[in-house]
Length: 118
Image (cartoon, rainbow, N blue to C red; front, side, top):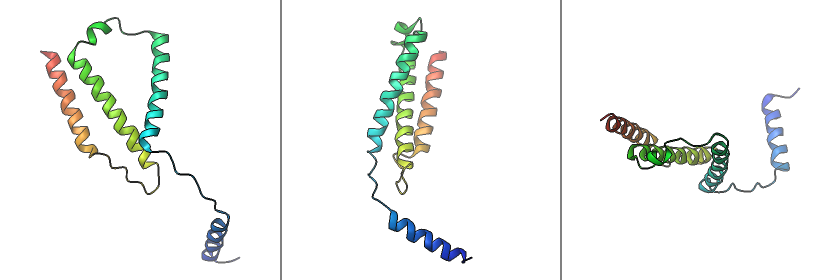
């Protein structure tokens, strides 16, 4: 039996000889948009099955509710794009400093809760 190094070298040589080019992945933002479209379809199916809130008309005019929905959508978008970027070897997942985004989201949510309590 050969040494582990020679087995590894043989494996590498075989992989290089048999390797074929791969196509590049679509831009992470486009993949995120497709993912979001699929998620919206699933959400629509859920709403069609369960219905919407009884007070949806009032909630759509309540600023704290709208801010929460906006923050949720922004957090979802940044998370999906970062995940798709990190899924590619050698790709930098940096979009924004996620610590800053998380901190701003938390402070905004706390502010909304305090505003709602008044």
